[in-house]
Image 1 (spheres, one colour):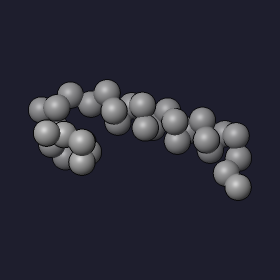
Image 2 (cartoon, helix red, strand yellow; image 1 turned 120 degrees about the vertical axis):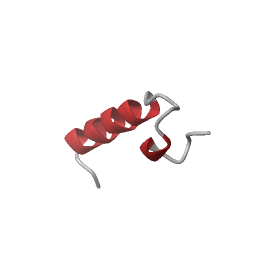
Image 3 (tube, one colour; image 1 turned 30 degrees about the vertical axis):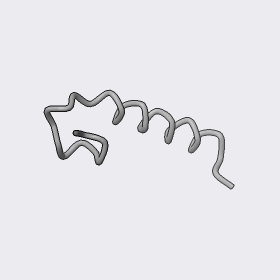
Length: 32
């Protein structure tokens, strides 16, 4: 079971990654 802090960090990192501009193809698999 992940701790509350780990969940918060995961959510923070996911949100940061989701806000990457699409001009950086290496920032994630969701860059079209």
